[in-house]
Length: 147
Image: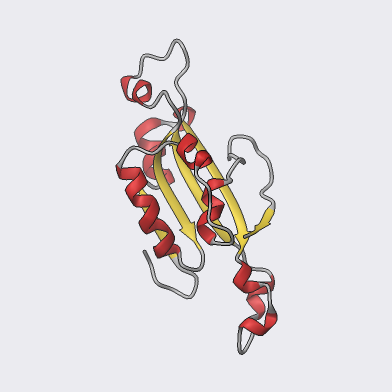
């Protein structure tokens, strides 16, 4: 975790490391952006930061894609019950606290399906990791979400 005014926290592989290790065709990269609830009421900050009108937090989950029937890659076969998570990245308030909890899940072999089944605590930044549906491969634009 990097403790800067807008924190950065990560666990596992970076996108670049995953691309080098597995290749683009074997990865699915989910991403989202959101605005924390704490940024909404202007009276919450003294003095208010003008950058928060346009700033967004960002989450990325890097997964090993589901194997196809003709795929003989043993490592991908092991994660057949869901896309195995290779890395999680968060840029936003409390990123270190968010990553700390998800690091345990990764260590225990969490998949994207596990994240989807997780009930996110509302309203928190960590909730964004449980509702991700847009992938880089899809080419869909990221929609700003609130938490």
